[in-house]
Structure formats: structure tokens, C-alpha cells
Amino acid sequence: MSDASPPAVTHFIRRIIEEDLASRKHPRIVTRFPPEPNGYLHIGHAKSIFLNFGMAGDFGGDCNLRFDDTNPEKEEAEYAQAIEEDVHWLGYEWHALCHASDYFEQLHDYALELIRRGHAYVDSQDSETIRSTRGTLTEPGINSPYRDRSVEENLDLFARMRAGEFKEGAHVLRARIDMGAENINMRDPVLYRIRHQQHHRTGDTWSIYPMYDFTHCLSDAIEGVTHSLCTLEFEDHRPLYDWILDHLDPPCHPQQIEFSRLSLEYTVVSKRQLQKLIAAGHVEGWDDPRLPTLRALRRRGYTPESIREFCRAIGVTKKDSRISMNVLEDSIRDALNRSAPRLMAVLDPVRVILTNYPEDQSELLEAPNHPQDESMGTRQVPFGRELYIERSDFMEDPPKKFFRLAPGHEVRLRYAYFITCQEVERDANGEIVALRCTYDPETRGGNAPDGRKVRGTLHWVAADSAVPAQMRLYDRLFKVPEPASEPELTAALNENSCIEMERCLVEPEIHELPPRTRIQFERQGYFCQDYDSSPEQLIFNRTASLRDTWEKIRKRD
RNA sequence: UGGGCCGUCGCCAAGUCAGGUUAAGGCACGGGGUUUUGAUCCCCGCAUUCGCAGGUUCGAAUCCUGCCGGCCCAGCCA
Image (cartoon, rainbow, N blue to C red; front, side, top):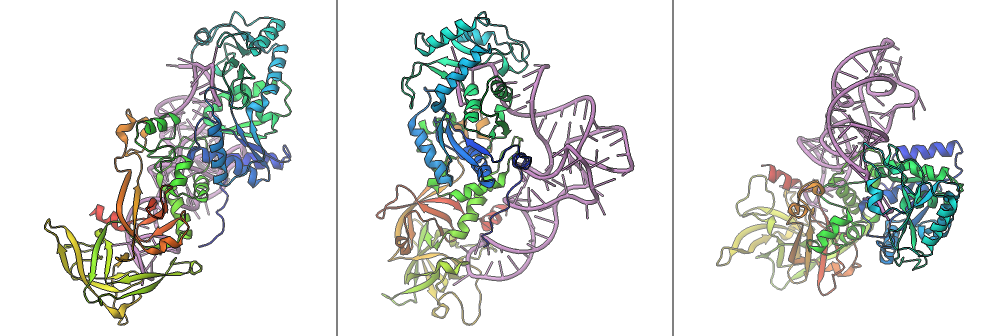
């Protein structure tokens, strides 16, 4: 239980920054996390947040949160709000909260300058024509007939585009680069398009909106970003990023560096696919605990530090990769093992009657709240003649390696007594309704004075004080590691991704803990109360199960 | 088939730019120990080999050449 923070992981971006600082290329670094406010953040965004904010933090620089809000038809203030919350929840504070839309006027000035320098022109072809004249991967494009308009005409047309004189699609502003470029992004890319749409921040003041490529590099430059970190698919855009900055006089020329995006096994992160699952009712919403969105992980019980640890563990490279769920699970188990107080809860109860325990007697037994951390204190657990244990902890005809309860077997009830099963009671259908057991009064607390050992220790709750609860046991959403490449996404869904246990029982101590406390129900896993939970109707989400070696052995044999 | 990028253990990933003896670490897996959670924790094992084939060199995962495999790009999306 050391609290030494894990060593910083070295990677190529960290090394570039170290070199730039050492060479005094930059006295200090500035990064930015630039989401488009058109959806909720997910675990993939966490990697980028961790990288951008992490590098700034590690080197004493700044990281801005910048909304890349250049497309009014897809963006909403609601998403921006949620993104701010999620970044904060992950544990980060931005240096400045920025919006690309804050730069619309400056961007427009830069566009004017590009036109004056003869590097941009207004094209009046329709989008269909622009597409068909762009060429293909192997053939060059052909010049627009409007490519050689005079600067004056371009300026006039662009001004009228801004003034809203034209309908959408009538004209666009294009960079004048090279229709024969091998890199398709350099074939006179569109810089501005006409959109008569309400923008969530600028309202109807603009009827032209800048494209990503024009906006991003200049926004970075305006903010003094030194290292513009983005994912691999923008690699082909870097020449354009540099071209725009090289053909204007921006305050600085940031360096774009690309890294591979995160993909996780057994899940999907694309907005389109998540939306589909929600719309079809396969999950409850954007914060359904089975989803990889940050809101969902939070609801499920993941801690911000466990997600940061996950991001640290996976590293940063340019290699396409798919991370195993085990890594995510390991990070939350590690965090919660250290911090979660322990309690007992029985998910699928079977009654136990201690035939030799006095009627109407009860007592309180002391139990530590954490087996390795005494500072977490102890609690009193009520015990009595009638108890409940886990149905799966009893087998009438057990295999040899089963050292839980069985007829004639003696086991320990954790922090309580040794008990021995004497009799099995069944109802008319043959269902087990109760186990009649005897207890050994000499073993109070869980140790036998004569030194005899038992192999099994079971969790339990007392019948008259246990608190009813519902538990939701989550598992991977899909049954295949790469659902996104499945022909039919929904066919790959794991039908057991959420198992609701309705008749669970929790020891009464639960009422002493704050509702969002992440706890370990011993031998079961880590849980926390769901948003739907109330003191009258407790509902728990299982964040992660415990490692289960017995289950592994059982399956193997 | 144009351009860009990538290939080190089942999954991640150091190391590659400035070649130097037996290729970090994590997850997973296997074995053992401690244990009142079959949890945790601790120990041990886990790539004679770095996509493949040649070449340079006293010496190559690192340099050169040629292959093979994978990802991305033809939105007035980001």
C-alpha cells in the first residue's frame, strides 16, 4: 500500500517536449484539448485529455480547453456544458476556456489576407462539381474555372458571402494550392462555406463558417499553443496546417504531432454507434454504466484517478492498437482495493438456521473495515440465530476442491463463528429453502481456540437486520472483442451485460456511509449506489467484480 | 495500383534518431508462499528474439536494400 505515484511513462511526445524545452525552442509549453461540442466525452477522449493536460502539468505549462465549434448545424451548448463537467471530474483545470467561435472575426481577417496575397479564391461551383473535379487517389484534380478570379472580385464575393447575400452552397472560399497534389487535402481545400444557421454562441451574426483545417491551426497559433497533439487521421492534414500558417503571419507556428487513438476491446466509442444502441433501447442512455462514456464510467463507479492510471498504463504511440478490458479493470480494482471500505452483502440469499443458537438472542460482532488498513476502523455487525448466506456458497454434492458449505462441512462465517451444515430443508419443488446448521460458540470472532482450521470463509448477513437492496451486475456490452467491425452491431451484443439482482441483502452499516461511497462487498466486488438509489430502495451498481480464481478453476475442470 | 503512417511476447509498451555484451515494465497466463475475502500482498516463470529476406559491421531490434502485412485519406464534418 504505497502511495508513491507510478513513474511517468516515457513516450515520443514527451521526448519531443523535453527536447524543445532543453533547446529553449520554447521557454514553456502550451497544449490544448479541442473537442467539438457535438457529443459526450468517452474513454478515448480521456486519453487525449490525460496527454494534453498531463504534458502541460508535468512541464509547468498551460493547457486550454477549446471548443472546436465551427459547424453550427452539429453543435449544442448542452454538450459543451457536459464536456466541461467531465474534464473537471477527470481532475483537470484548464488555463483558459476557449472557443474557436471566439476567433471568427480574426479568422475572417486571416482569410481576407490570404485572398489579398492571392492564396485563396471564391469558387462558385456547386459541391457536386467540386467533388468530381477533385480527382481520385491516383488521378489529379482539375482547376476550377473560378480559380483565377481577381483579388478584387474575390474580396467582393467573400464580403457578400459574409453579408448573407447568397444561399447555402452558392460559393465557397478555397485555398489556392495545387489541384495536382498527391495529398488530396492540398487540392485547393475549402476554407469557408455558407451556412444560414443559428450558432449556439454567435447566434445569427455569421452566415459563413470556417472549416476545421483553416480554423484549427490558426486557433492554435492565436492561443500560443506550442504542441498541437491530435490523432493519426490528421496526419495527412499536417501539410495543410503548416501551409496556412506559412502563408500568413500568425503569432507563432505550433507543431502538430499525431498519436494513435484509443480503442478498447468489447466496446464501441463512435457517436453514431452509441446513438444507435441508445435509440434502439439496448442501453438506457449516454450514462448507462455499460458504456465507455465518461458519464457512464462515473455512474458505474469508476474513479477519476483509476481512469488517469489507465491512460498512463496504455502509453502513447503511433501504432494502431486495441487495449484489453483487463487493463481498465485492473486500474479500477487497484484503486478501489486500496480505498474501498468493506461490507458484507448477500446477492442471492439462502436462509441459515443455527439450531443450537439460543432463540431470541442476538449480538454484535466487530469487523475491520479494511483488512490491510487499520486506519479505516471497525464496525459492529449484528449476528443472530437466523442468517443468510450466498446460495452459490452451498453445494449438496460438492466436488473435491469445493471448500465452502456442504452437508457435514465446517466453514467460517467471516468475523463470526464456525458453522457446520447438518440438514437441508426443501420445499415441495425441491428448492432449498433453508440450511440447518450448528455453530461453535468457542469460535466467536472466527478463530478456534483448539487451533483447528477451516478452508472456507463465507460472507453473511443477519436475517432480522439485513437491508434489502437491488444490485446491477454489469459485464461487457459485447461478446466479441471488435464489435465495431461486426456486420450487425446489435447481433454482437452480450445479452447478459446487465443482470439485475432484486432480492439482495446488505448489512445495516450501509446506512452509515455516504450514498456515493465506493465499497467492496466482500468476496463479490466493488459497488456504489446508483443515481436511482434511495434510502428506501437501495440500488447498487457493480463497478467491477473481484478476481475469481475459483471460478477459473471451476470452468477449467 | 497515388500519398501518409505503422509492424518488438496473447494484449499494451520501453529500446530505434546518435549500432555495443544475456531485449525494461504493465496486463493476461502458469506455479509457489502468506491470508478470517478462493480478494489483496509476496516470490518465481513467461520473446536466444525484435513482420520477412538479404546486406553493411568485430558487433544490428537499432544502419542499408528489397519484400510482406495493417491503418488512414477523394465532406461545403471534425
